Amino acid sequence: VTLVESGGGLVQAGGSLRLSCAASGRTFIEYNMGWFRQAPGKEREFVATINWSGDRTNYAASVKGRFTISRDNTENTVHLQMNSLKPGDTAVYYCVVEPRQYGSTWVGDYWGQGTQVTVSS
Image (cartoon, rainbow, N blue to C red):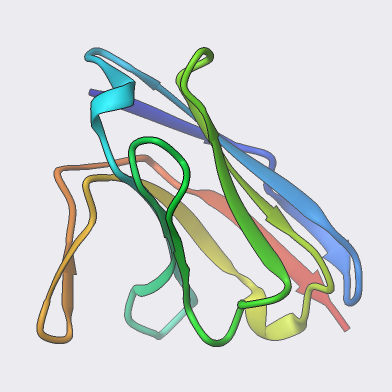
C-alpha cells in the first residue's frame, strides 16, 4: 500500500485546511484509516481514526469539535478537515492504514510520508 498526503501548508490561527490521503496498492475499503501528527521535539500523537465504512470515528480530545475525518471509498481517499486551527496544531501530519493502540502505543500497517501543517499566531 502506498499513501500520499497532500493539503498541508501555512495558515493563520483560526483558519482552516483540508488534508487528503490517496491510497493505492490494495483494496482501500478493507482498511480502517487514521491521521497522526508529530510536532518538532515531540512524540507522534493520535489525531483521528475512521473505520472501513466511515460510520465510526474517533478523535483526540485536543482536536474534537474542530477536526473532521472522512473517507471516500470510491476514490480511495481519506480526508482531515481542520477548522479553528491553533499554533499548537503545527506538526507533520501522517496518514496511516490500520492504526491500532496497544496500551499507550499506536502502531499502523502503512504510513504516508507526511505533510507539513504550520499555524501562525
